[in-house]
Length: 159
Image 1 (cartoon, helix red, strand yellow):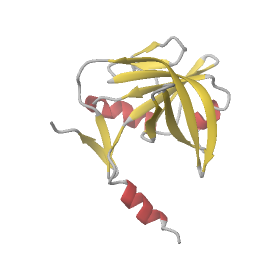
Image 2 (cartoon, one colour; image 1 turned 60 degrees about the vertical axis):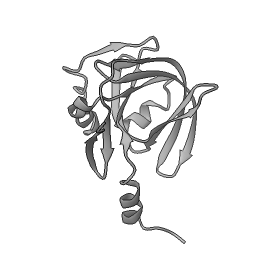
Image 3 (tube, one colour; image 1 turned 180 degrees about the vertical axis):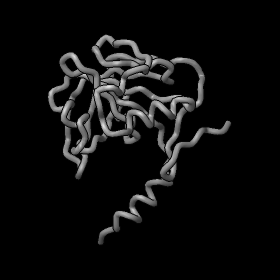
């Protein structure tokens, strides 16, 4: 048995997910991309995973990277998410505030939280690669609401 792609996409679209921007420093250049296929994997040791489409430039950068960061976006950062979801160019970081983490990866200003990770393992996963990272640094900032992705669009958490 198999499920067609349209049905699969429609069903998964009903699962709300947080929105992140994954960042990496490659030689002297910063790279980033929006990723919603992110989750925690283990508390001991602290591990997370991110699934990256194999056709993206970020996938290419992660083949040699030792570290990366995951920036959890706040509800008012939809434009940041859209910017990093567009086809990559060299100006993605222009005008975007960030600091450099201890691993060298960019940590976006005003994000809900940051995770700095050491790349532990890559696993094939269909048209994606599953990236496992050991968290080597983490910080949460404030109590803003998260940016969510639901049914093909952005949403906010109501409380």
